[in-house]
Length: 172
Image (cartoon, rainbow, N blue to C red):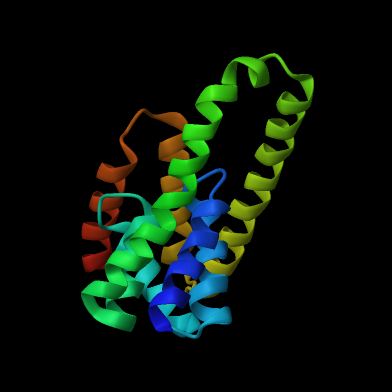
């Protein structure tokens, strides 16, 4: 039963992963923390931090981590299949419809609304992840500087994360 639950939970994540990236955190949290209690809220925040340092898609990393924690290698495989199948199926179906959808005003409106929903999900993730941090003046300064550096320069975000992580060793 646990393998079925892993597949279903991550199938839902994969099916609703419109927008990708940080939009997925609330979806994954709902499944692994709220629906199935495979990890606590604190563990979710900790794993989110760890996962940020690992290359790859957020959904795949969480499916791998959660599946392995819950049911070992079979759980890892099933969770990854669950998260990969919906977008793969949708892409295959959309390829055949893309010519018709491309000129549809309804499709353009749908995508515009999804963009705003994506911004809302990212804002929610920012709120929930920020609430879990122990804020002090150093944290505010780091967050502000990272924002400004990304806004004003062409510095790669991955390099910036690495540099700020090293800086954190000395500050915290």
